[in-house]
Image (cartoon, rainbow, N blue to C red; front, side, top):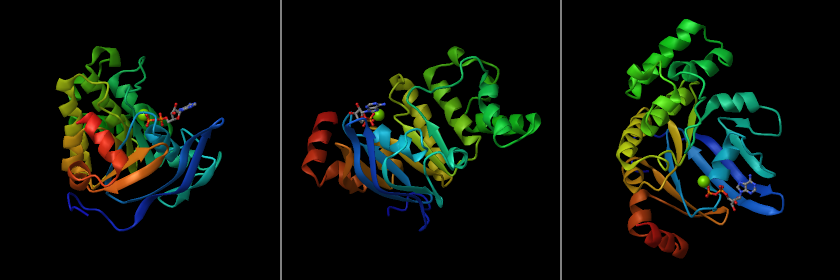
Length: 250
Ligand code: ADP
Ligand code: MG
């Protein structure tokens, strides 16, 4: 525990011996991970190692075939609990995935009105608070295509937060951004970590990991090969495959 922000003792995500197959391909090979409330975990690893697949199983974008996943006490099982889980778990993708035909404000208010049953005024009030928080309230009436990548990603974060999730998953949130926009998105994520949000972040941004993460988890070939503090991972990786990977990206 590095004490970067307050982390509780109770586990909010428990993945136990999770296996995932795409046809014959064994993409996740018995993944075990426990994340405590308020913890920030950075997931890193080579392309194709199963990082996206793993976090997608956590909100059931991908079903797993073996093992158990529990989020805040709710077990993810086929078909059932889907709505409950999607409400608890927010997700931000590399490619933003905003609704192109809706304005910024409509992107953020849609799900809270539909799923959380907020009325229009409540949903707009909340959306504007979130847009202030991510620093772009003046963009409220624009369409996604009229925004920069960094702005779109901040809208995507605001949209996910509008559902008041207990966990936020980020899959390479800055990989599609021009370098000058990476910081504005990472700054929003840092602020979010400071509020005590539980976060799983697939990223190769070492500065973010060192500054914000409680733990770095290294994936290779469908499983976790090393778990370490950020300091330990980047300066003294324990596993040969972690060392090789770091030598290739740093
Ligand atoms: P990462 O995010 O670490 O780059 P992924 O989780 O995307 O890796 O992919 C892990 C492995 O699973 C890869 O070999 C990939 O080709 C395979 N895979 C991912 N999604 C699918 C899919 N929908 N159908 C078939 N294979 C997939
Ligand atoms: Mg991926």
